[in-house]
Image 1 (spheres, one colour):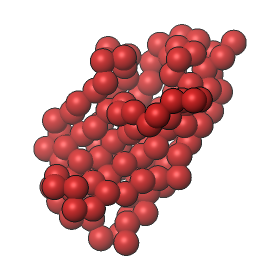
Image 2 (image 1 turned 90 degrees about the horizontal axis):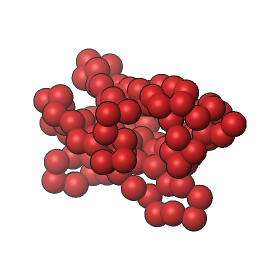
Image 3 (image 1 turned 135 degrees about the vertical axis):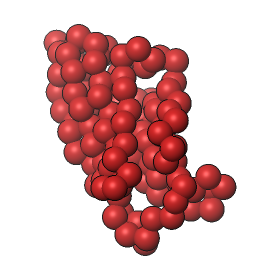
Length: 117
């Protein structure tokens, strides 16, 4: 079984920054894709950013240029650096780890990010 432990959420003013981290433990196959989704109030869960084991990344257009994603394969950890945060970034952010074929697909418990003055 795989567990994902997230940290780093909180309350921040518009224009501020936060960094989320997620560490996976357990039987983790490689290669894989690891990253973040979010679910805002009254919205469906949506992709934020993903990183392949190789380091290739994919970002939703709404966060490009503001968010960066990095991963430490040795520690099975991904970091989401969120800059220039906007109120519309308010959501529960979920860490995700999956195989390339979706044979396995794991979720973290979620961490709240609130952007408000």
